[in-house]
Image 1 (spheres, one colour):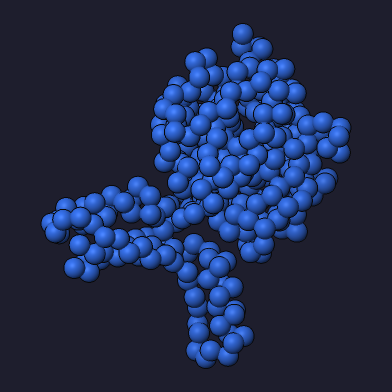
Image 2 (cartoon, rainbow over the protein chains, first blue to last red):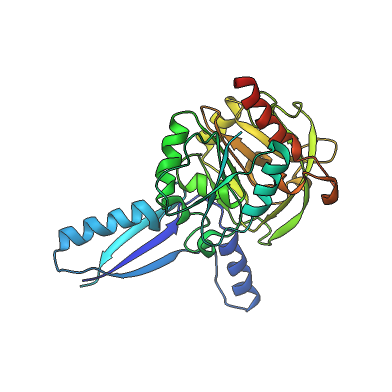
Length: 80
Length: 233
């Protein structure tokens, strides 16, 4: 089963990299950019087809390693 | 003083640290590979050195923090054992839950490698007894992610409990944004845990311990630790 875990910075946490990207987009003339926040995407394949178990495994992966929950939020999506 | 230095793939300051510890304590530290599950018997202080463990993949220190040896380090710290975590070691200690907060990308987005001035905020910890409170020391930094942040509640607790041990300052000890080179909250360069037995700091005292290095301001930290164990013995 394929899944995607998206990790994003919590609101209120300063994101200097996002700010730099925002500046670069503005200097490239991309119009209408209000702000940029940088995150991470993990595409993960899990063996077996049990959705409940897969979701639990991914949640555990996110909590234990993929996200630092002090500063980051995560979202688990099963793609099928 | 029996020191154990943790070694992870990608760490590169372990030999500087071993040299400083040997020079000041007169005893060679043990080098402990990350895949070990136990610390050497009789270890007094665990040192998590600087470098780029696992290439800083995922987040600085994130993968090293989950290595087998870290369970032993957590148990050691829970029993009151001293843990000194420098630079990448500080990042690892935060990721491992030994210290609160996170070290983010430097505010100016640049890797900074130069000497900085630190104001020693307390002299009543095993790590800082070799200094006077308010003393300013000059030590090098070399990091891209040293910008300490934590939520407001955690910062208030750290400040309220006097757990900020080192702060970036001017050569005469004034805390000023111009001298806070990485943008850390409250110019925090080093903190201790609630119990006072785990110290995390971004700068490298081990690189200013002998005349050849041009400065010996870092020596007080190691000399203080040696003194702590001599007094305890």
